[in-house]
Amino acid sequence: MEAQSREAWGTKLGFILAAVGSAVGLGNMWRFPYAVSDKGGAAFVILYIVMVIVVGVPIMLSEFAVGRRARLSPIGALRETGGPRWMTLGYLYVLTGVVILAYYSVIAGWAMRYTLEALLSGFSTEPGQYFERSSTGVGAALYHIVFMGITISIVVGGVKAGIERVSLVLMPVLFLLVVGLAIYAATLGGAGAGYSFYLRPRLGHFFSASTLAAAASQAFFSLSLGMGAMLTYASYLKRDENLPGSAAAISFSDFGVAFVGGLVVFPVIFAFGLQGEIGASPLGALFISVPRAFVEMGAAGRVVGLMFFTALLVGALTSAISLLEVVTSSLIDHWKLDRTRAALGAGLVILFVGLPCAYDLNVLGLFDAVAGEFFLGVGAFFLALLVGWRAPEVADEVRRGFSREALIRGWLWVVRVVVPIILAVVIYDRGKNVLQTIQSLIAGP
Ligand code: PFF
Image 1: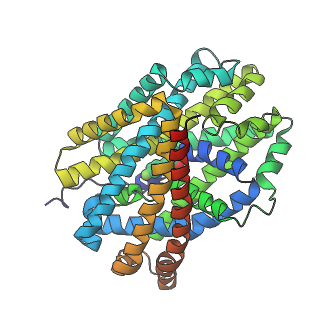
Image 2: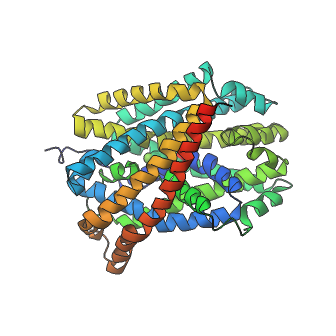
Image 3: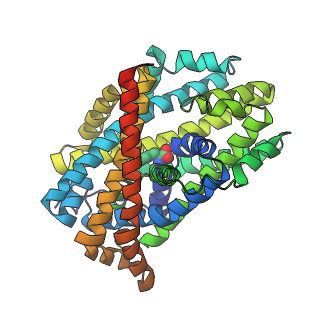
């Protein structure tokens, strides 16, 4: 009864663009450039590509297969796949969605404020002070509330009339904006230094475990893996799509936008000699150095800045929708609420959980370390164990619409052996990072 009345995507393109919309977001234009500059430029980019292929695509395919096979949101899907004990993993997914969206929405609120700023008055000539003033406090809380309101209203609209419709319109806009910005950035004098930092590998950074963990966890965050977002989206699929093809296309698009995002951010920052600033404030890099460059550009900077922050906002919105949908669909399937109540209830809880992040950046950083990095690693690790060892029959779901048996066997082997080993490193490293973050919070400034 439940399965028959389940909502579904209207078109294959709708599903793909919604999933790309989930993947492309703050992770691409905020976290990726920061991770690249923090971890040694081009070497990190290469390692990141390897992680997307070796762990990202296989886990995405696992989520797709589990979701479409069960046609249920995470808690029910994991119970169907592995038995009642695996529901715990589903609860972790819902919790992760709540915590990530709580701080994600605060950052998206900043992007909304900067977009309006570009439109109405132009950027502040003191971007550092402006960020300090505007990133926390009542203003930040209000933008967070407005952003959550918009996200809730789209999720209330449902899978086809809400999420799919918005993605079909917004994703092409986002692609055009990012490509247009990259072309503009190429015309800036001094862009070359940015490209060289971004694209010329300096070996030596390559082999540390923490760089590997950072690349893998960036891949999970960016591809929306490890908390059931892709699982939930696949649960609305009809039976015969080619799942590996979709996983590859979505991962490639997500990488494409992150890569082109780097072709915007680095030339812009280097052209104005602002590279020293990136490392100073990881959370604020994008909201301080990049606007400073826009101010230096003069009149053009306002238009370019408007395009930049609009792209960021659009990306954040389609990702936030998927985060809220994980929680909403769980309330619908598992707790039998109707969609409007589920989306509203979940959204309001998340709104309140996010308020402390709008008042204290340390809380925001802690939420990111715990949920955005550690929980996603744990979530993906157990999913790999489930699909690789406990329920390898999930592979039959991949066989619908895809017949290259050797690839399916290769995928299962990677999920069984390679992914858990890499994820064990990620969990250890990111777990350590959570403890350090908590210690420094307790110790105070
Ligand atoms: N992938 C999004 C980004 O790169 O900004 C963030 C995200 C969305 C993470 C959905 C996890 C998720 F389930």
